[in-house]
Length: 192
Image 1: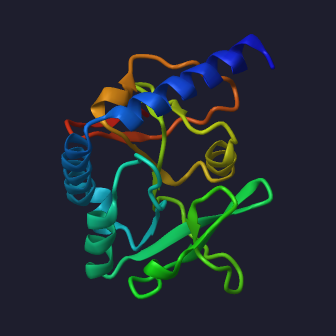
Image 2 (image 1 turned 30 degrees about the horizontal axis):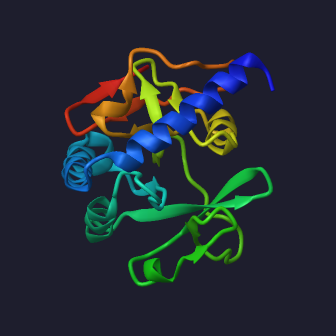
Image 3 (image 1 turned 180 degrees about the vertical axis):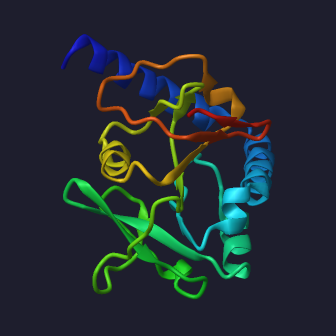
């Protein structure tokens, strides 16, 4: 493991611990505010399809956002890890409680036919442990979203996180893909 990779891995461990120790009530309020900010975005209003993630651990709780999207007749796609890639499948409110846990412990949709398609400009909400103002995100270290964003650069990628995990700069390598927007409980930052 390179020094750079070791530095990122140490930072991941530190961030996971910090996030786990965060006051759950503060995190719940931050999640609610982030959902409000996402729903207020023009991109949400015009989106027909939204790529999402199912929050695990202390990730931002997006359930209010999902409900608002379904109520607005949006198509929500959730990822499934297949080999070293992400495939997205439509999940409606009736199927949502039936998502099955993957080997990573992440609730995923059952594959039904071919993965759903999405178009340039579709909204893509992405998790992270932390991000910096330039749009570099620190994920869990497997590179799924970096590979996905590299293959789909025209998506309107948005990373959601608590303000406490937004940094001026994070260690980033050439293959670390930037997101186009960051949404915290306090603000929306355009990164590109």
